[in-house]
Amino acid sequence: MEVVIADDQTLAMLAADAIERLLRTEAAPVLGLATGSSPLRIYDELTRRHEQDGLSFSHAQAFMLDEYVGLAADHPERYRNVIETEIGSRVDFGPGAVHGPDGLAEDLDAASADYERAIAEAGGIDLQILGIGTDGHVAFNEPGSSLSSRTRVKTLTEQTRVDNARFFDGDLEQVPTLCLTQGMGTIMEAGHLMLVATGANKAEAVHQMVEGPISAMWPATVLQMHRHVTILVDDAAASRLQLGDYYRHAYANKPEWQNL
Ligand code: GLP
Image 1: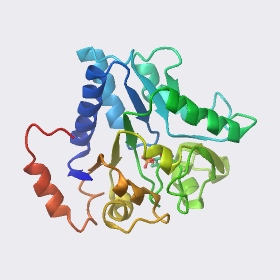
Image 2: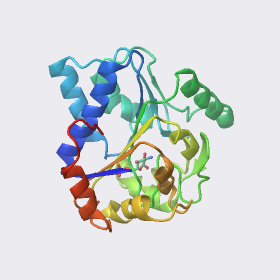
Image 3: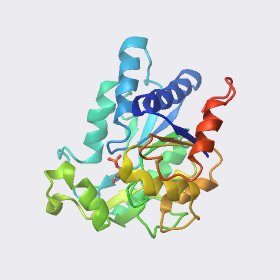
Image 4: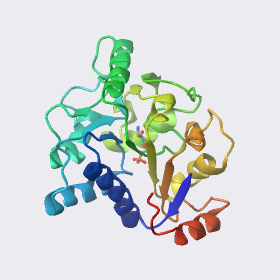
């Protein structure tokens, strides 16, 4: 794991640099997109590079992490629509290039299997952007999730629904209880995992993820088993890290040739 501690704009620039490298060097890059507020600065920066530097997504495919079950097709908080608003419609993805699990499918198990197949047919995800929930969930893999799980239906915890109620006029009743989510096993197959977390409310989850024992109680801890993980955190989210000084020192002394 590489832990980079910097201000949130610097973190967004670093993530955008890695994505830009992938887009400019691969013939058929596959990006993993996350919802939530954490990646928004990255999406803004990618949009800026698309508009000002000609960065193109036309040869890329993208896969979303998760989706609420049952939100109407035109609901603004349906993750499919959120991703379209935040990045899909702002850059030049080709038609049908952005994929998401179908939270409106009649057969949710079949939709989950279809989604796994689509990722495999695209050749797997090269770079996956991730956020983390305050309870250590990744995508919607809540505490207790199998660390080798695949895309499937999950029940959201009360904590996650409370956290996400801000997107539903603060009304908990409007927050769905079920979701479809890539599993931890699915996520672990991406080539490069890039997780961004900011703010003091993420500090305990970040500490557990990086320094805690691997446990389904904090699903993000399985990232410790991945060969290529970048953890991008601001000072507040890094505030409970025991080895914070070491991570800062290592990054400050990183060889220039070494990318994220
Ligand atoms: C949501 C999403 C996750 C996201 C997390 C944190 O529930 N399903 O993919 O990482 O919660 O969200 P935020 O970045 O808004 O804090």
